[in-house]
Image (cartoon, rainbow, N blue to C red; front, side, top):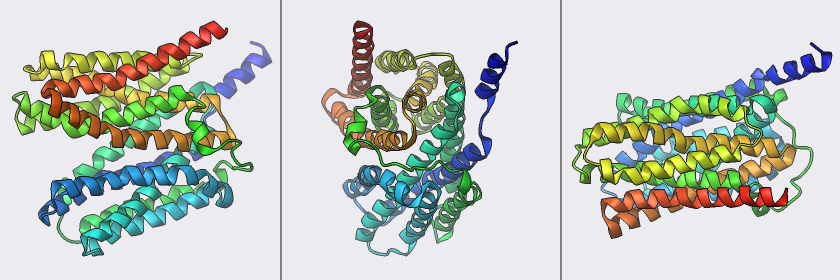
Length: 394
């Protein structure tokens, strides 16, 4: 075997684990806190007699906060450094998480939501930039699959903790704040390993949205389908004749699909020179699965089977889209594009529930499936157009 070949294999297999463990561990701790906090806050607002409209409006502050934080995160990291910015964001998120308990007036929860979700958005952007920068190109899909799987476990652990501690007293808020503070530990330990941003991004923030459109459109569809689907799937299921317990179990099945498929999809993407066809295939499978839902709505087992694979395909748009982004850009451009990536996700989380909810009101239960399929169809068309444009240009 030639020396060049040996060096290539060594480079391919070299994964910078200290950086990856720090970034993945920190964001997973935040995932636990978010998974605990979202149902906790909703239940407390319900107990206080807050209207559903106001609960929805307060919850929507998460997407607004993400859209505000995304454009400025790279600038902050360039000024203070990636690790330092993450540590400041950890303390802001922890303080605001605990602040919900002491904020007696409901209006206070709006600025607290802005601070909490703005800080966690910063953590997501910089963690994913760190992970993308530390992952070797030939193993990027595997690394992103590991990240997505661990993060999914963190999100799943949050509701489990909530089921154990309930919503009374300061304890659940303290647990959430403590989990977020734990995120600072691996970041501080590996602070010298964090990627440096010596140069400012070359373009205006919003231009990065269109720089790698296959990735940013993928995460927009993911955000719309994930939040719109998860929020309104129980309504679709109960109107189709299933019990609340059966409807909740369908969400669990989707979650299992999310966790189970990310590493295999990541490994598959590492074998591809161009990840865009894989993204198109995932969207096509997602569209087909959505269109099948009305036809199998009377069969719980068939629906669960479809949702198992469908959930994996939906999350694959995020994982593979992030890998594709990392394969195209480096340095400050990658950090800025990662911020644009999260921005598009936030836009999707705001748009998805609105479109899917309106579709259900207009078209009944079938409107749920058609609207979800519509998001996927938009991406399939974009993906096909990009590949066609590439072939013509070649």
